[in-house]
Image (cartoon, rainbow, N blue to C red):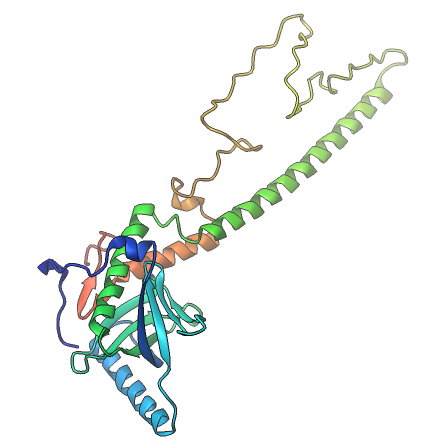
Length: 304
């Protein structure tokens, strides 16, 4: 794995951006397995892993076990490893977790990549045997990483796990609506207590009945479903008109503008989503080393 690959030599990608962003590129290969490695990058690291898994595969082959076949689906959303018959997903490796990818120049069928496991956070080296497509698969993963990183930067990471964001926001809205109802009930209780206090403390026969259209503070009660009353104030003048809200900006019942995942800042995200975005940013900052060359497109890290 000693051939250097450089994008500075006007190396063109093999697939259209649409093929990787809207669909996926499928490949068939044999899966030698995966093994834990100590480092996220390095030719020697993957070379040792390949030797280890090849040796283990030879032992299994001598015992009559065949090397399992898999289908790889490569897109900007990751590298999926599936059963070619049932299409069951065996592994789903997100691109920002893949740090190293290479094909073996001494054995042109072998290619490998290192991916950080999402549960254990350990670095795992995946090794495959593809009779004709080892180099092409390696370059396809590099192109997918390139496109995914650009998309992440263009969107600011705000399109990540949109469904999770919506679910979190919906939960928060439900909580706020519950709190709002509780506050309304408390205000009503306080008004009732104040009214009772005024009745008991006023001299006999001096209680002035209140109009049913006003509260104890002689204010027209707020009603979100009825227009504002045009009843004159106590001095006989009409109240000033309420400024109309702009029709262009719709607000919720708390006066807040609707959530827009493509225009809000990083601080607007719930903590769990922001943690995910930070993780993706760190993964992309590390870059993907493809046969000895680091891909890094944005000045998140000036050393790239």
